[in-house]
Amino acid sequence: MNKIKKIKNKKNKTKLICLTAYSKNIASTLDKYCDIILVGDSLGSVLYNFKTTKKVSLEMMINHARSVKAGVKKSLLVVDMPFNTYRDPNEALKNAMRIIKQTKCDAVKLEGGKKIIPIIRILIKNKISVMGHLGILPQTEKKFVFKGKKLKERNKILEDAKLLEKAGVFSIVLECTEKKLSKDITNNLKIPTIGIGASINCDGQVLVTDDLLGLSDGKFKFVKQFANITKLIDQAVRKFKFEVQNKRFPKNKHSFQN
Ligand code: KIV
Image (cartoon, rainbow, N blue to C red; front, side, top):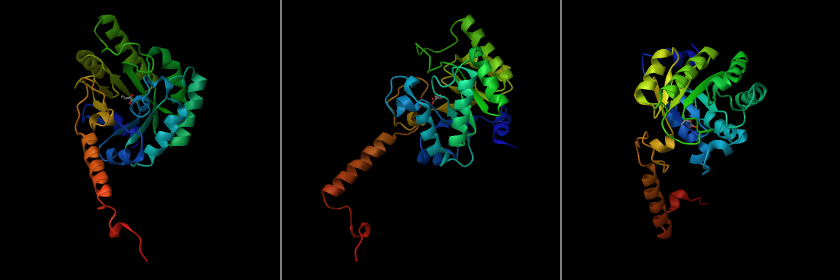
């Protein structure tokens, strides 16, 4: 069974595990536990200190995805198409093909609903697997507030989700959709939903790995910090400095002698 089919088959059976990775070493550890590894354009804010994801380029995504690919053996590898790389079907196809060819990833992720259906259709027609992304759309969002407060907005997101499924996406990320809305969407689709800030009512969960590890300073309501890696790095580097300054490192065993 191919990887995409395996992911789809997990709906209603077991929760899907998805995390972001931007480089090989982290990816190779995540690979043991994840169904999906996402090279998210969140790398713009997490790694490059950009205020929004708008400045993330195709080259950045490709370079990081190539590194991640080197650490991935079994998970499905998805790469975000960055802002302004899928403004029309031709541009999207050219750029998606470049991502797939240069990174050997399994699928691309695009943000949006009804407006991008013709783009999704052309990618799928060309045998490119696509993951959707609804709710908060960081590439174009003005205000980062949860989605689904008003009925009109709820109906629009649910409608978009159905249209994405019909167009052939294999899964949809729901970002910060209200709990009951997440449930309605998940129950109305045959494909799995992957939530971030979208409650327990999704078929799977994604987080930005740097947030989960306590490497970033992001303090979003929907993040749970499962470790404090910054503290561990601090301890290790402090010890390194101490040992170097006190001539305890390097020892003979770390040196080359004739
Ligand atoms: O860019 C990203 O990392 C994402 C996830 C947060 C879903 O899109």
